[in-house]
Image (cartoon, rainbow, N blue to C red; front, side):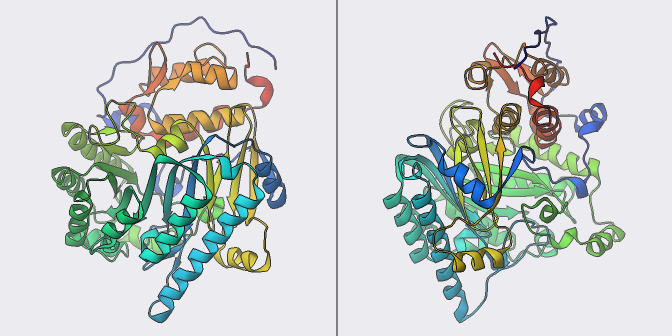
Length: 495
């Protein structure tokens, strides 16, 4: 490809008090001020050549992934209740006698798809599995016998690293009895619990079925295992205030919660993006009723909530790694670079291959080259189950994307930024043949991010700042996906 002359202009870092002054940051960067109902930024690529299902399967089979670090994701699309803000692929689990029957069925389906992948992808049995995540939906609805079947399958069918991180996701009401002890006995080493708010009024309005005391009980039970876990918390929800969200965080800090993850409410329609379901609050009439009642926090109020949360976390010594995942020192090792969950290191920091199982699940195949194959499973649950019943060996892929050159570079940079770890100039020089500090348009992009206080330049590369962390999804979408991923190949420099 054609080379462009490197710029000789110096790159300077603008001083800014870290993590504070969100009103000032947004006022200085109006292009990053994305409103609630448009805020549904997806960190996977929506560019690149689209592939059909069979073509995606062929490209995936040709991937050279043997011996390479890989992450496994199993999507359990069942919930005992449907949260009004949730736009992930899921369905309401039946009650009564059909409940366990449905769990049996979905365990069978996930195992069936995983076995199909192992048979169709020659490299997969030899890939080095470093992390596994059981999410959803609500993966912890599964009984111990289901979790054992899945764990036995993973251990017997894959090359799992001895120190692999294996995570199980659930809600507080799934972790109130002996469920955690049973999961630990089966080999699960990390947990994720979706609390969202400790204010019962907030959770009730959102359609959740747990209250403050149930949440605190679940956190204490998880603390008793001595294993790492994260508590998911949301801000920008109806009935929340700056004070209540900050007090919620202080309560979790006092309980020595290892990781507190904070998420802004996304109220755009993921179904239209082809990566989820429509949420109750996505429906126009419902959204308007909440507006008429004056219950939506404003854009500035929402970010004031985040600022108040961050102040409490910083005062307690927490650090975000990855962005939005605030960890106590030493939770995942010593030092800034080490203190990151394995799932985040595999998926985001290193952009390793991710193999995904279940309806609506998406993943990617990456390697040492710049080519990436992004995969998307059938999103509609009924169509997914029908496909699995009608076929015996085919993979339930709806489509995929082939990313090359600037497209895969943009995706890798976006994920690296999300990891909130060093963006190493040496890594990108070796893997993509570009110099982030000299080649255009990369040099100008990072110069702007640094000038705006969103990155700092070190001898080894660029580090996201706390101001950058506060708007990381907007930055990933605007700077990396649009400016790099959206350009034509001739405009990127390769050395």
